[in-house]
Length: 285
Image (cartoon, rainbow, N blue to C red; front, side):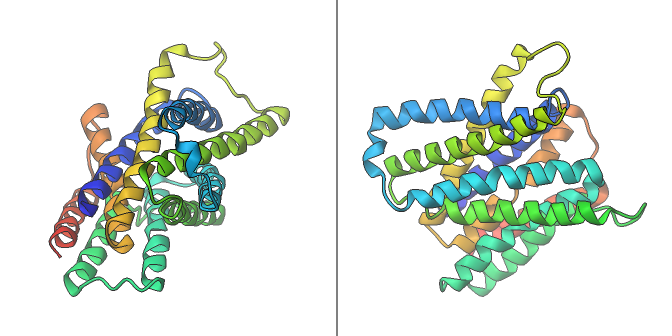
C-alpha cells in the first residue's frame, strides 16, 4: 500500500508540475499558485462540510499550517531559481528535498532493510539524473544555487509536515483544506506586494479564462498528491514513502516528452531507468 500511494503521489505531482510549468509561460507564477490553490481550497471546503471534517480539528492542524507556509516559499524559490539558472542545474538540486523526510524517518527510529537502503540510494541518484544535470557550461549564479537548495528544503519540509497533519481520512481533508487556505494567504500576500512594486498579475489581455480547467487540474492534482503521500507515510516507512514520492521529476520529464515532444537527454533516460530500478528494490524490499 505504501508503494502504491507513494507512486501515485509522484504521478500527481509530476503532472501538476508539468501543468504549472506550462501555465507560468502565460501568466506569473504567483498568479498560478494563488488561483490554482484557491480552486483547491474551495473544493476541499465543500468536502470538509459534507464529511464533517471540522470535527477533527485539533493540535495536529498546526502541522498543516506550517506546511501551508513552507509550500509557497519553496515553490516561489524554485521558480526564481529557474529564472536565474539553467534547469539542468536547478531541477536536480530541487529534488534533493527528499533528504528531509528520510532524515526525519531515521531520527524517529525507522531502519530500512539492506535492500531498501540500496533502493533509496539508486532511486535518489536516478531522480537527480532524470533532471538532466548540467555538468558543463557557464558558471551558475550563487543565488540560483541557494534558492534551489531553499526550495529543496521547503519541499522536503512539506513532505514531513503533511505526514503528521492527520491520522484519519476526514481529518486529512481538514488538514489539506487548512494547508490550502494558508497557501492562498501567503501567495496572495506575495502577489499583492509584487503588484504594489510594479509587477503584473495578469497578461495584457486580462485573465485567460480558457486556462481555468488547467489551473483547476494543477491545484487539485497537488492536493491529491499531498493526500496520497500522507496515506503512504502513515501505512509504511516514511523513508520508503518519501523516496518513491520524490520520483515526480521523472514523470514531468516523460510528460514533456509525450506532450511537447521534448527529447530526453541520455543522462535523463539513464536517470529514469535508475529510478525505476530503485523503485523495484524499495517495493520488493
